[in-house]
Amino acid sequence: MNNPIFTAEDVEAAERLLLKEGAKFDEDEKVPIISCMDESIDVIACPGSGKTTTLLAKLCILSEKMPFDDGKGIAIITHTNVAIEEIKSKLGYKSDIFFNYPNFFGTIHSFIDKYLALPFYKETFNSNIVSINDDIYNLKLTRKLVPFSNLDKFIFARVIAQSKGKRLSRSELVKLKETFLNSIYMDFEQEHIVFKSNGKTLVKDPEKDIYKELYQLFYKDMLGQGYLRYMDSYLLGKLYIYKHPDVCKFFSKRFKYLFVDETQDNSYIQNDILKILFDQGETIVQRFGDPNQGIYEEKNLVTSQVIIPTTTVYEISKSMRYSESIANFINPLRVFNNGKELVGNSDVKNIAPHLIIFDKEKISEVREKFIELIQSYELTNDKHPFKAVGWVGYNENPERLTIQSYFPQYVSQKKVDIQIDKYNFHSCLNQNIKKKRTLGNVYNSILEFCVNYLD
Image (tube, rainbow, N blue to C red; front, top):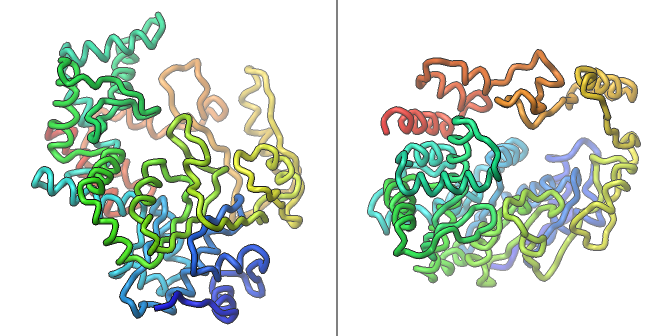
């Protein structure tokens, strides 16, 4: 079957579904992207450009042309479940087909888990994975650290060395030991113990006692019992590909298209797995993202490692979110520049960035000054209210700044939780579903409670 052809009528139908009445997709930048169905491309879009809506238009039109005669499907990969819900809400019933075989619609995590990590684990350990969750893993991991063992002493020495002579309280020492333990993992391919932040090897000699203890902890006690971190599932996924290289042919035969949204948020190993799986030339890969908004956990990671060059690069340079002055301010700060300047929206008020400078004794006035600035520019919007956002809600060290430093009436949920004397399943469940009630969060609550009390 030839690749589907999108007509002007198809694009107009998508406009009626996705845009405000009378609005049109930009003929210079967006329509060519929507209509491109015969080659792999990278779409690089600025903040507020409507790149996800552009992808939605492509999917909306595709849904009317599926199923394909050759029996192939499409894979749509996002970075978060929130993005999936957004796409479902915008497309409505048109999105139903994407959740049925032979299609896949889900996060990068669920894609790797379903097709690679879970099969490898079942094949290797002849059992099922209990949990793939960093928080649950770290809870269980710290409980398995035996006090005064060689490993405990090894970590203690490392923490003391890193503190550079600073006197540590008992609680600080315990926290730092947990942080150090959670910052390392086992590279199952090389069987080395490495740091998550930079990939540097901590221990690799299997004859050393400390290596044997770490191997016992990470491989037998954690992995062997079905507890994985997200990074572990990616490593197992790569091992599955290396062990069964023919699996790549399966993906090429099953998926005619691969669409990746918010690709800048994928880690290097996630992008590497996708590249290996779909590097057969049979699947058309179209990726949407903005490297200037990337969330890169790996240190020393450069843009060229995240943006995988393809034959064609499209760029959306017009932002509907930023004013012209903000766009001009941001342009020289952009890490990735493909030659196009970011263009601001002339309909958005030109307000220069503001930095509030204050003396320590006047910190309580900062919030009021923020409100004053909003009112002075008549920035009233019920649909998108302004919010004061802080990074640290609660800190045990009273000398450090928190949200409460600026707004004394604020009470951190973490502080409330710390004051709860009796930890029970009900409190655990409430903590996990306070933002969103999903079966996944309920499941995580059950696992977390079991880790705390049934270990």
